[in-house]
Length: 123
Image (tube, rainbow, N blue to C red; front, side, top):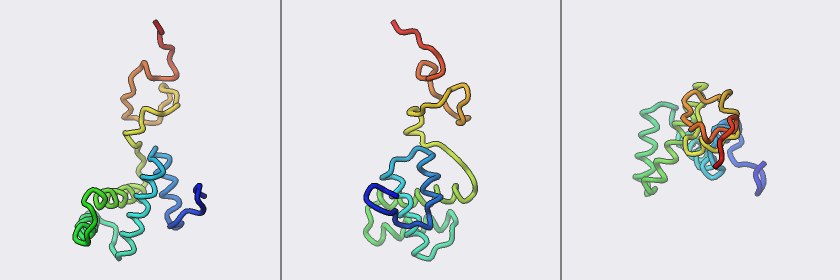
């Protein structure tokens, strides 16, 4: 349950949890879930072509292109979720508390001096 009450779009709770685990902010998670809900509400089937059509339709209906792109990005992330993929939000990647030697992110490029699992010489 959110700070203000129950979440909207409860049919996407698993997707919401998946986005949160990937490190997205609550505001971005809300936007991505809302975009996915609107995508299905408009009657689209989940495909790359339909995601592009959805974005174009939003822009034609007066949505700001940046917001339309973010809503469509939420649907793209939902497609990855449905396909069983997991990824990390790169903007929040270096804010982890994980032991670098046991890092679950294979593509992590975190510098050694930022790792919590190694001692850093402090001058």
